Length: 326
Ligand code: SAM
Ligand code: SF4
Image 1 (cartoon, rainbow, N blue to C red):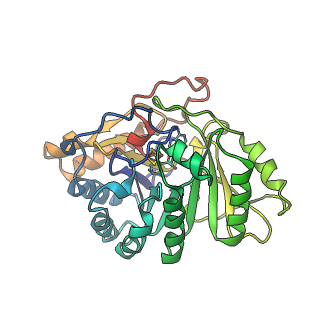
Image 2 (cartoon, helix red, strand yellow):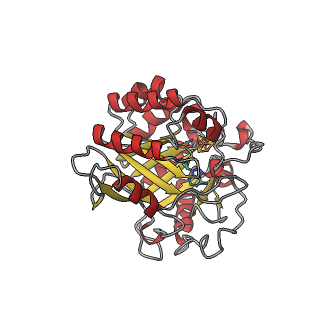
């Protein structure tokens, strides 16, 4: 299925909950957000029906996100049901990693293919501060167990804020030498009321990585499920680095995704307030064809590109990142 700008839409990112056990400074306001009531979020049956319908109309890749997807009870069984859909060939999940160690084996067995794990610093105090109480050791352990059970290829998401240090970068360089992990630096997006100080630019990070004496970054292609990141490798490293630049060099021209929020709205673009209400349709008895029509309408509504950089980062979004899923 192609949109009006000839982009093939094959990927649905599903936010299964707006709840989270962290409160990262770049994602939620300090005082937290008003949480959805249980009846406001889509049940697993409703989510599965939407996923089944869109999979019959060209979507083969599903990513589960949140909030923190692993805090929603029943997630393992839900993944097993998605894995049973014939047209879905790739199921991935984005997590803060805090609950992953205890769940990774069950998630893998249920049919989850791979995980992206958020890790902004490897300094325990800074980690606790940026996540508002997170325990670094749990996330590191989550990464280790995910590798061990084969939830691979693993990608680590690092949002570029001013907390990142040379010590963090040296650790990441060492990690990609040892493990087949992709470390992806993501430019901070000023969404909602979140507060974070943007960090170094991508070129600065590349220069720093090049300065550690482990070789010079070279561009590469063909990272499985590579999405919008541009990937680079260091000689002899098992892993790679990715750079995601929604602000300085947006990648809207290759965007292949639609989003579904936990409260049942299709979103054609992360950086847009536009939404289509699939939950109300579903609860009023919509047929599969009517759900598919909403999906097609969302694809038709996909803007050619977002305007955040043009707006000087001043665009107003009524949702927090934690309510959309990143
Ligand atoms: N809780 C999970 C996690 O943290 O990985 C999944 C949800 S989180 C909203 C998804 C991704 O969005 C994370 O990798 C997070 O770092 C990223 N993210 C959140 N707020 C962001 C922002 N303002 N700018 C850039 N990335 C952001
Ligand atoms: Fe929670 Fe993920 Fe947002 Fe951090 S980035 S507050 S872990 S949803």
